[in-house]
Image 1 (cartoon, rainbow, N blue to C red):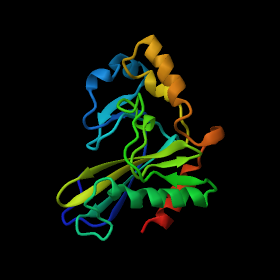
Image 2 (image 1 turned 180 degrees about the horizontal axis):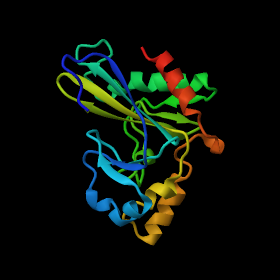
Image 3 (image 1 turned 120 degrees about the vertical axis):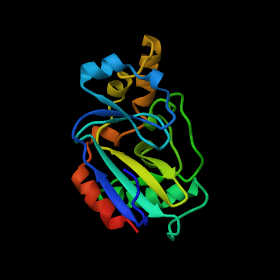
Length: 205
């Protein structure tokens, strides 16, 4: 879906109706195990923003796109700083639900598996709770607008995502162990996505 012309501030809430593996715009398709995806009933799609893959499953993830025009007061020419207001809104929403959320305001922090898995790294504006990434954000910019594609985890199961990628047995085991504590709400708590969305809408500028 493209931004309308003229572009205005917009919030697009994407309803997840079935499982999908959402690849980043530059992610190599050869890394996908298409047979495993077919066997699991997982559709493979590609978004037009960067980053690694996200496994989208109903009631396990909240996907929200935020759109602003290029002449908006929220616009930042600095691509990294452009994420900060988005992360601040998510952090405030999580805080309303009782989570001590932190916005990453530094440069991209890459992990061994971040080119394959979105939640394996930490980018500007992304939000963590107790050191675990909870909200991933990717950006698509044009001369007219910026679109921030946001994924908030209710549940983190890296093994299910990794099962859909082409990996050797050793790499798969290493990735599962490495990613287990990098994302998701600590303590295995499942986030109430309806409450989180309502809180986000209240905290958007």
